[in-house]
Length: 328
Image 1 (cartoon, one colour):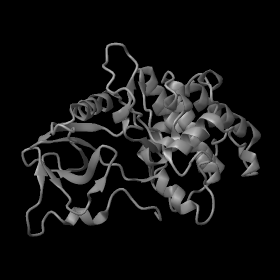
Image 2 (cartoon, one colour):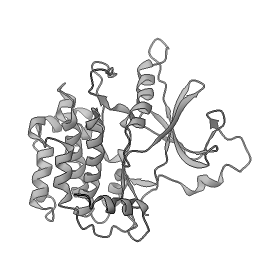
Image 3 (cartoon, helix red, strand yellow):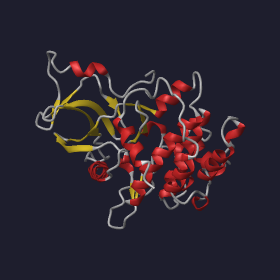
Image 4 (cartoon, one colour):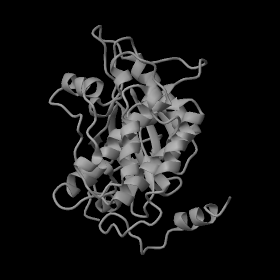
């Protein structure tokens, strides 16, 4: 793969070298000292589960302190809820949660290590030469819809859908990351977002996230529309030089039709994206299930995607899915 991989092959041989290696979970999880990278709420490391002999991803929460010097308890609550929310969202497109715990004053979450390429990295590379095939853009979005359908059925809204939270694996499957800021719609859950605090990434946020509207499943569909539009054109048409400009673009700028920027996009797909980008949530498709059904028509025969998807390699997941696809 040309794309920068999530897994670095060098980490697997580091643990035997001399020197102190950081561990968590009473020594169960060993951290790769060269894998540390920033995440939305703290840091993410690659590691190894010594008990079960498998690679894992370990996410640490950043414990911010308030002005009075005390820890920010809201971040702690969000982290604990991420473990519970992600663990109960059983879907092949969501990384599995294996464990969570504390390490001194730090909180950590142990998850499945995804061997894939972030769509944000794919876009960075593809912008230099070539385009994402229309069929593959639709296939990525369709798989995201499958995850969203499962989440929305459980009253979970992602609220931060963006290319950096989507992983394209070498077998062609897609993983959706970071349900940690999911808004739980069920009345039994506590809303953790403080008044005046906006959760999400401005370049991909729906208008209602800026203007205090109701956040719901169609909020995710808007963000998916922004991502799909960007995958097809290599440009986020709403991105501004500041959060304020991005907000104004999302709330006040009419989306530009896809075919004005890429001629090989089918008219029906252009109409679908324009519906996803409707300012009023009521004007968007009713559900992720509906969008999924519409997208399938554009990705029935996927072309080769060399450098990103290894179509020739044996894939047990594709075998499994091909049998399920015959139902009905």
